Image (tube, rainbow, N blue to C red; front, side, top):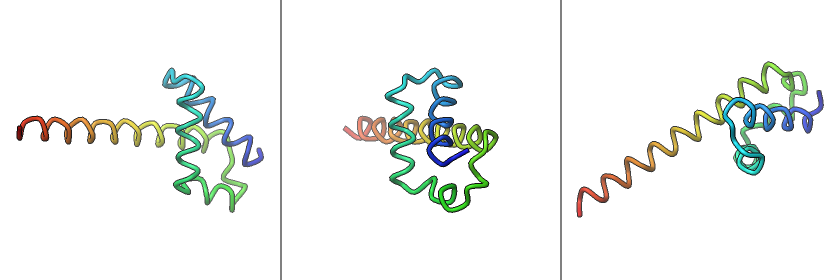
Length: 82
């Protein structure tokens, strides 16, 4: 699959596996692109597989969840200090 098809597949998997709406899934993939998460995929087309798309969708979603949990903990600490 092409790099663009691969990104579409990751986006689709995010909506199917995690019940994200299209806009949230697109933003997650776009943000990952800007952070160069997919740069190797672009350089090595053989990485653009359905199996890799699923792995990347899981990784992106887990990173998002971890970031949200960290932010909640930080906000809670700030509130506790007041």
